[in-house]
Figure 1 (spheres, rainbow, N blue to C red):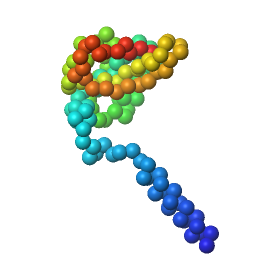
Figure 2: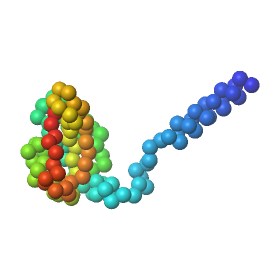
Figure 3: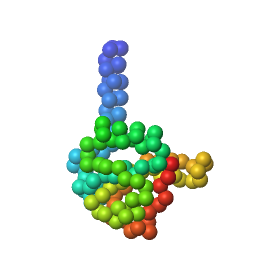
Figure 4: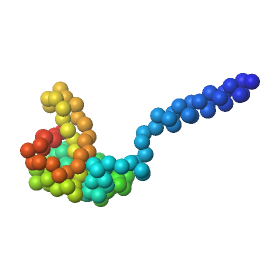
Length: 120
């Protein structure tokens, strides 16, 4: 009886965990996702060599979904309008030393005036 109860609990746990899984991107349909899949992704350098080197090493090891390259943050204003580009960069929300740093992924094709200051 105890073995059956343990099995049922494991089965229910497995069903609960898999029912909360994220959507699989294989059959995901979205214009933004299609634009991203067709893009070249640019890692926006932060200016912090240690972070930039570690991020590029991680991209080279594991980024397989799109081709990628690195750009300086000053190049973002000219590349942001390119619909065939996507970007990964650090975004600061709040003030320096009192804010939150996020790693953001976003598509190109944006108006230059919408470029936010990406900083580390």
